[in-house]
Length: 394
Image (tube, rainbow, N blue to C red):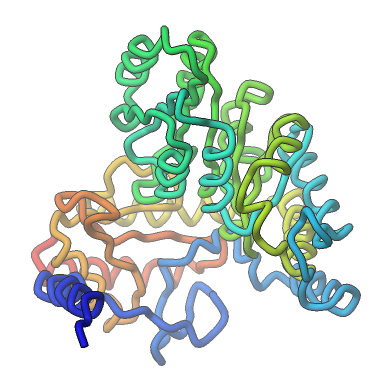
């Protein structure tokens, strides 16, 4: 029997192994905590997106249990048939109030929120102008839309202006899209200048705020709030899977936008809606964000402490401005070895290489949370230092 697929996959996997880029999944055997058990080993966890520790917050746990008892474990249908429950509407209304917009819609993930929205509102006669380091979900949405894709250099306002001028006469719609916080480098988009330029050329403005949701702005309202640009960004995408602590994504903006997505966004139309427990715990998370601001304050206190430690030790942390802090080592195989050696000594910081980042920008990616203790962070810094010197990284 000819096994074309098996032969192809074996060659690809052997190539990854030869480059020391083959990875096995780390298995979490405890709660997702600052110190957690992966592969049977207790480690300080610097790889979680659980920025505020909400995935184990008592109020979220209680909300999930109550919703399960009341509604069951699943919704049983897509939103447009029989799967829109009152708790889904409550969550979307809660998000809209929190983000200070007219309306919102929840998707199954941040990925589907981005990809589904871009593909729904743009077509082959339109142009998408995208930052070169935007998330893969934006890139996939751009491809699905069949619109012309123009990419400008990362955070380059000269590059953005050049593309806007070059496409000024195009008769179709133009969409400018950027991450708020970039997921691999931890830097923040220069949103005020992007918005101003987008407005001056009559384009649509969209931001993916996955890593800014619950992190930037008042009570974690995101990049738009951080820069006080309310009413000037047409489409805001956020996640419920990171700082919010649960699962899903959302899009918010005008009522017309959300009504249109109800009719044209394929992930919304063809995927079963969230289990009641997910929706209920997300609602509780937004209550916590507004009522317990000390969590966000602690997140930034820990972020400043850890960054200063890395810089003091001489690590290259790029342009990071947020709890996402890369330690750039410059080779994919070295990044993976560094990650493995750190794990052996009690620190879980995942290695990242090509194609997620350019080979020369390979790194380990660290994220601190509000629930890390100073003792845990000091331990992690000591291990990063010791192993880094042993491998010649610093």
